[in-house]
Image (tube, rainbow, N blue to C red):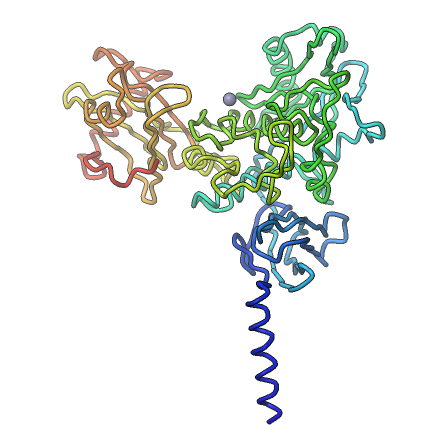
Length: 504
Ligand SMILES: [Zn+2]
C-alpha cells in the first residue's frame, strides 16, 4: 500500500511537470566527460524560462560562477574552468543538473598574443562615454580573446571538425598575458597616418620584437581617437594578414569586463553619445552594437591571419558581415537596438559562425593542433598543369589533407571542399570538367593543405604555356615534384571522376 502511494506521488509529479512544461535541464552541445582544450566553456541547452545559474566548485575565481537568461527554453551560458575535472552544477530554480568537463590546456608551441599598443607617451586611455569607466583594458582584452577562442571551438565542432581552436598566451592563473607595448612615435604623429600606413609601420616593428615566431598577434591601438566636430576617426582600422591583426580601440568601452559581464555588455542598449563615440555599430547605434561589431571585426581579421581564411558569401559567417552578430553566440536573444526596438529571438541559423569552408581550413592550420608536434617544412605542395593529359595536378609529398575548389570572386563562389582521412599524394582533374563544375570558364581557383599544414593556392587559368611553373616554385623543385608524381605510377593517384562527396 505504501509503495503504491509512493508510485502515485511520482506519477503525479511527472504528470504535473508535463502539464506545467517544466523540463529537466538539457545540454545540447556538451556531455559529462567531454574534454575541452580552452578555459571558458559555453553551455548551450534547454531549461525552464527565466534565469539559469552555473557554479564551478573547482574554480574559486569570480568567473567560476555565472548566470544567464533562458528565452523560449533556450540558454547559452559561459563559465570558466580550471585544468583537470570541473564538476559543474547548473540550476534554473526548478531543476538541477550536473556536468563534468575536463579542461586540458593546449600544449602547442604556437600561440596568439594579445597586445595593447600605446604611443610613445605610454597613455593607455581608450575613449568612453561611461562616466565610471574603469579603463581596465587588460580585463577587456582577456575576456575578448577568450570569447573568440570559445566561439571558434564551438563553431568548428558544430561543423564536424571537433573543438579545435587557437591557443592563447595564458599565465599560470589562467589570464591572458596582455602585453602593453609602446610604439616609438607620438600619438599625434600616429593619428596622422592612414590605416594602411599604420599597418605598414607597426608590422615590421612588431616583427623586430620577436613576436612572429609561431605566433599571431592581436594588436589594439590605445591612441585611436574620434573628433565629433569633424566626425573623423583616427587610427580606426581593423586589418589582418600575415602574423598581425591591427585594431582600433574605439569600441572597447562597450566590451565586457569579464566572462560574467558578457550578458550585461551584450544587453546594453544605451544609445551612443555622438559627442563622444564614433558610431561603428552597423546601425545599431548603442553600446552592445558597438561592442559586437568591434569584437566581430577582431575575429574576422584574426581569421585573415590564419592560413588562407577567405571572405564568405554565408551571411552569418565570421568571414562576411556575420561578424556584426558576435553577441548572438553568447546570448539566447538579441537586445533591442536602433534597428529593431524589440528583443529579437533568433533561430539557430541566424547565429555567427565559421562557415564550414573556412572552418575546414582552420581545422588544418598549425595553430589549431592542440598538442606539440614538429611540423615538416620541406616538400611543400604544388598544383601544376599537365599538358600531355590536359589535367590539373595537385601534388603533395606529405599527402593532401584538404582540397578547396572555387570560382575566384570576392567572396569566393561555387565553393566546394573535401577533407581527406587517408591523405592522397596526387589528385588529378580534367581542366574543362573542373571549370564546368565551378562555372568558372576563366579558370578555377584551387587550394590544398598538406598533412603538415603547408598550403598552396593557384588559379589554374594562370597556366597558359608549357613553360608556366606554379607561382613561387623554382625550376628545380618543379622538376623534383614531377619526378615524384611520375614515380607514383598512378598507384596513389586520385583521379577526380566523382563530385558527390564534395562539401559546400
Ligand atoms: Zn576581410
